[in-house]
Image (cartoon, rainbow, N blue to C red; front, side, top):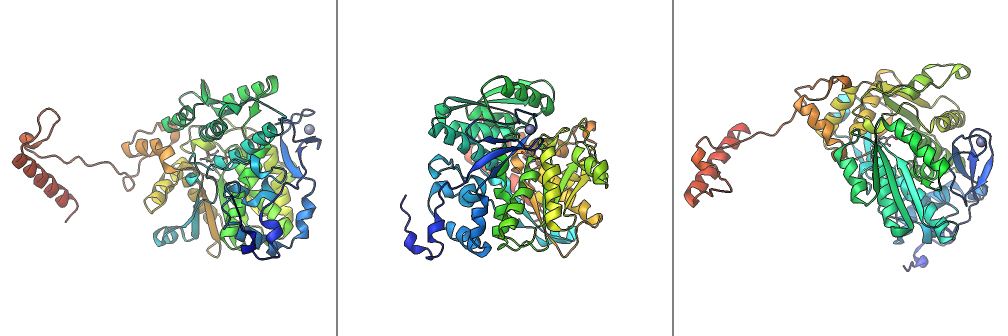
Length: 499
Ligand SMILES: *Cc1c(COP(=O)(O)O)cnc(C)c1O
Ligand SMILES: [Zn+2]
């Protein structure tokens, strides 16, 4: 695709189209060992800890002033190059070693931020936005990380370093949907296999990987059990792991923070970013993204970060309950059923990342700036329904975010001078099964939720009283009868609507 660079201001012209100038490497969070990105690697071969990816050449980014970076990203919005239309608008911060030819773009990123209406702002006493990550291609934020992970695999394939990759992941649903979608785009180069907990994902979540042509395996147990099998597979066989152990996914998910910064015109003063926590990859990425922009001077304030967990899956919340850092000890929890099913994780893979990055984040902020709150299942459902009945399309995890915001306000962690950005991590329709059960009063007792009549919404059946006026496939109505039918049903609807 031709790009007429003459249209861009001269001083930023050399930077508009990025070239791979980074020197990326894996670094172990346990022993600090470093490894090249030319191999498929998920945990440290020496100590088995998770990894993060860094850029040895990152100081070159400091040579460009923060305000110039802002203009580069603003002008990049005008580009028509597919590789730079998604998360790789921020190429230097996401995949600085990846050439544009290896980048996969399926429409991810740049999801809209929707300001809550006055009803919701008055009800909560806070100004807030939902960032609709359910508007990504597979309808969850996981596409951000998957675009990055699959681009890195394509890069290795293009370099002739690997071939015929088999990718595997365990999933509460959205990871597998996303992994299967992105892998299927690479055709025969990548075959994807996904492991799901049997009967623990919604039918829509099962349909997605099946529809993308992935091999789907259902395993008895919960997500944490599937994860153990995937870990065993990845350490025993030559497969590409696409769970959030994969450090490339963290890089891709950092785009969420970059977009928030850009959408607020780089002003992060008095901003609060709330995310639900499951495996804790997303909150790690969100903190890391803001830190990177802050360190280069693209933003001059770090927003407050608040993680949210359900009381039915709250190991990260419990960890931070201990105020004395030296006494904190991480203990996995046994999860209870949660409508925020995508976050129902008792032993988060990215816990070491959270601990390290949150410490850096607080230090860079000069004060405590990362918080975790806990909410009840009832609040998750009630706030999700309230949000969606006011113009949003949020999933249960997004409901958890709003419930968390209300909780954070009650605890004085946020106040009315701040603006909150909530993560609607998936689209409402992916989790409509829970809405259905709530409306019918059929959620099992294990959730601890009772259906509040003010939210219940069920279809109203309207039919003529006279059986002769009811149309059926076998016995079509005559034209005068049909007119009677139309009149009768219209009248009944008009009465019920109070017309
Ligand atoms: C994966 C997921 C989460 C949890 O994110 P983590 O990175 O695992 O903490 C929350 N909501 C949705 C919709 C998800 O798919
Ligand atoms: Zn190590």
